Length: 133
Image (tube, rainbow, N blue to C red; front, side, top):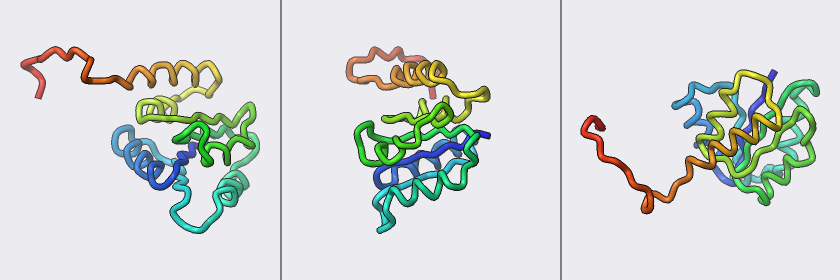
């Protein structure tokens, strides 16, 4: 079974979870919004992993690579616990909707594709289409 955890500083993870549910129909995602109350982050992370069977696949998607939230999940990395930092909506959708088992290759390819969704629109030539809304 795959478990998906979205984790961020403040409420980004909650908003991302809501967006994944709305756009992709993604369910059964755990959102960890760090530093919104007095609960230590390491305690929250420990409780989450205590409830996950050791053989299950875990996908953790965090906001900032060198951030404290990402670092709280780093000790759990293994051959079946995947930690991806700096996520955007495209990356989250692709990985959470992946039907096959996750692998480093699948994750690398998804990150490469998702990074192409970040575009400086001032320099992007957009063709007008009369059929567009």
